[in-house]
Image (cartoon, rainbow, N blue to C red; front, side, top):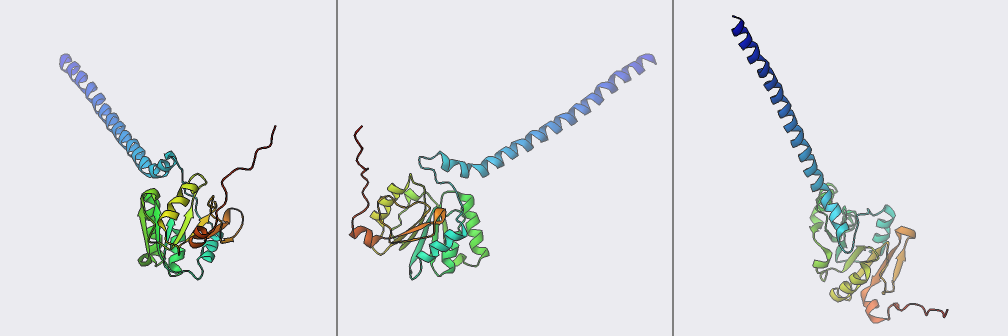
Length: 221
């Protein structure tokens, strides 16, 4: 009898530990899966925002202010034809232009912003007059557009100025926001500070001299 009890007691003890160990193992597995899934989800969301910053020319997402939008629309008065927003972000410029009757297109490298822009266009009832593409602006030809809106950074403006001058027709108007082009002389300006926009009519920019890139003479030491 004592041997049986001893045998039973020895058997019961390890079984309880085994069940507890299984529960701990299962809990640890679920925690690992949960943390791993969260990391993957965070990576998938963050990557489109981080990747542009790793490029040679960083074009961060900075939403246009209401004043900027109004200044852009002012520069589009009495204009017609197609419109493209280079670096369209969350689509607010494209949507505002579509509400004014333009066939408006946005190019944006961040897929999350493109999907959100499409949703906003659908929500505002202008999805039939808007299109948004996930694309690198340097790999796109803008030759078919007569109105171009650019939210750029100083590092990219000289190269973009050259690209647009080579691709666009003479009747095109380019509207730069926040930062002007380095060589072109603007035909119109609106706003002040960060809300300033500059409008360039390409037929005038090609027909007259551009701003000199030469620096002022250095004074002798």
